[in-house]
Length: 192
Image (cartoon, rainbow, N blue to C red; front, side):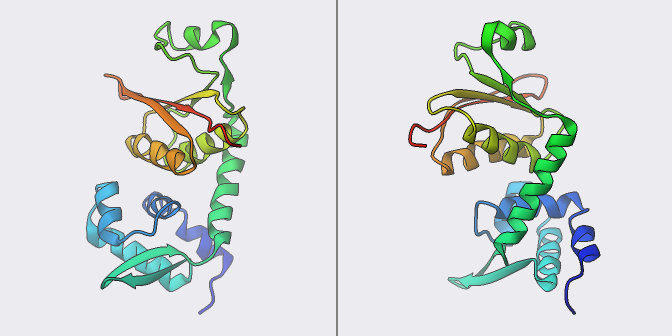
C-alpha cells in the first residue's frame, strides 16, 4: 500500500515518533539505543520504528546481527527541517544580538564569564525545534562567534551538544540551573 500524504502527516503528529526520528537525524541507531536515549520503553520504540518502516519512512539494515534504523530518503529529513523552519518563523524565534549588554539584562545579570555574541531562547519548545534552530543560527553566524542557547527540555540539552559537535562547532560550556534551564555555550567553527 503506497504512503499517502495524510498518512505521513498523521505519523508525524505523534511527539514520540518525532523524538524517535530526531534521534535518527544524526545517527544510524538500534531500537535499544533510541529507547535508552529517550528513556522510554523499548517495545514502544520498536513498535513506532516498525510502523514507520512499514510506511516507507524508515529503512533498516543489520550490522553484526543487530537491526539499525535510518531514513529511507533525505526528503524526510528535509521535510522535517522545513516544517521546523516554518514553525520557528511563525513563532518569531530569532536569536538576540548580545550587543550593548542586552543579554546580561535578558538573563537577569547572571551572564557567565563567557560573553555570547547571540542568544537563542528555546525554552518551552521540544525536540527537534531547538536542535535544528541552534544549528541554523550557528550557520548564519561569523566564524569564532559564540552562541548561547537556553532550553528547558532535557532531551534538547543532550542532543544539541552532540549534533553541534558533529558539525565541527565547539561546545564551550553546558550549565544546568536549579530551575531546569540548560544553558549551552557554543562557538561557530572557524572553517566555514
